[in-house]
Length: 343
Ligand code: SF4
Image (tube, rainbow, N blue to C red; front, side, top):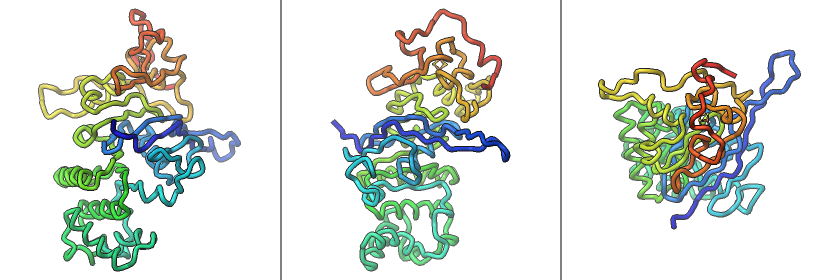
């Protein structure tokens, strides 16, 4: 059986917001709300969902770039930080992150070679070894070290800079790389090249990826598994082919049906999701999707659906898919969705 490399347990992050300048009332945005999942070694887990669903916050919490309110990260069976035996310094070498903004991620005053070798030198690699490794990694990401090592970030294109960011992440010999919208800012042709590069590097360095994107085509191409988030929670997760062909959650189906088709015979005739996105400060009761779901019943507003299997490793949080949930298949729909109500 393939081992689990990363376990996320009951991760939670609420961001405090003040109602207005003169108010003492403390409100919170439920950015990530008690999520748990596993990442299998050597696989790519795609994380999708609308803007604000919590996918990037989840990535930052896993990478320890911000503290979680509660929850645990377990890496190769060891708890990370205060809850276990794996120190943050060691964990940060094993898990690296590549961000969307390739320019902001690079120090404009360092050459490309200095950028890639900086991290290993901080972690006690000699300057000479670190520079040799940087040249080697530049070649691995498709940039000729003789041409690029002494250049500065502003002398590179967006695609080239993102290759440098990938090389810099690999300089730590990580086991997991989180790619947060890493190809979103690139032209389609460059995007395809970087995606192919990521696939090659994954095989060569035996990496595991968490691939965060709003682009469902890209996630389908690169992922083995997919996790769908809505308003800070996981609503569906499973092997990518199965979820894309047999999506069980109405939100996943709506997302997939909103993907533009190249075929004029398959134009989307009506909006796949009705209603406005709910306020994350006051998320809807029960199923958070109930005020936009055309299948909502009374139980959906009162009972939080648990993530339960529909097929072996394919899980979904929707009462409709679980006969014992009390969901009435013959009842009349609660008309939240058609009213377009926000709560
Ligand atoms: Fe729709 Fe109810 Fe399923 Fe939520 S639990 S997605 S409201 S059917």
